[in-house]
Length: 382
Image 1 (cartoon, rainbow, N blue to C red):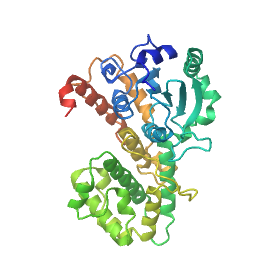
Image 2: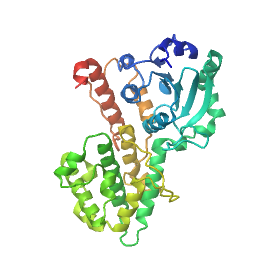
Image 3: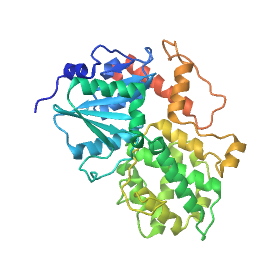
């Protein structure tokens, strides 16, 4: 089947006359100075998810559009996992020549099709006719679509909430190991350090070559290290890696006495971490697949996770410490309001006097970087 012409699907959905920031059809239309919503995240969506357009409402991405020659469930499974991990827009619309499939970004991914033969996240199929497609769009923009299909759009299944829920469950299980009770601060630091390390691997910042310089062989990723046996080897290599990361990436995560912490880590702790990072649901014990991909999870989400675990030995202690979890979308909204009317962010200085994990500063940095890229397109290609 031939590829659909862009103007055809734009017209079918009734968005042919919409312009940025309400509808963005290419990276070239992303403009920080013009207040495009989350330009750094949308750039990644265009370049990595290969979307063909994004519909925004009230400065928030609502629908990603992608046109294909045919619906390929295997390809959709991979795409949906990346889409869910990015956690930006709630709806993914796949446009084929004769039909349109709608997927939810609030349904966790799976590596297999559903019993009905659909890719995970599937909501419904629409006929490729203008009336149905325009009615769909109107329903989304009015909010009715999310009410009618509310079981498919449960915010509790958003990537950041799922990850936090599983991390909390893992933390609880680690804390119940009788062989050596770890202090709450040690548990929090360990989990945050592991998430950050996983992020570095998934983003390609460290790789197998990096591990070889540390005499860590037979491993391509953090998960391979945690799976090693005997567990004494796994622990030795894990803390050798932590020690080097502390030298290369200066920060609070690596300020702890790693040698003292290593002595407290027992085989039972490593078994729990190995199961978690290989997809076992800590709460149910069911073996699944690892749904998270930090190559797509925004850095703001990592920052929010750190903020959540910051001095978090319990809800009361968090309140006393003044540490609260700021969701990424809320941080983006606050930045949108604070920066409204600004034509440029470069050459400005920013202060966050209540900085916890730095989620607002991270968001500002991403916007500064995106504006610089737009002003230096040749450098951005390097």
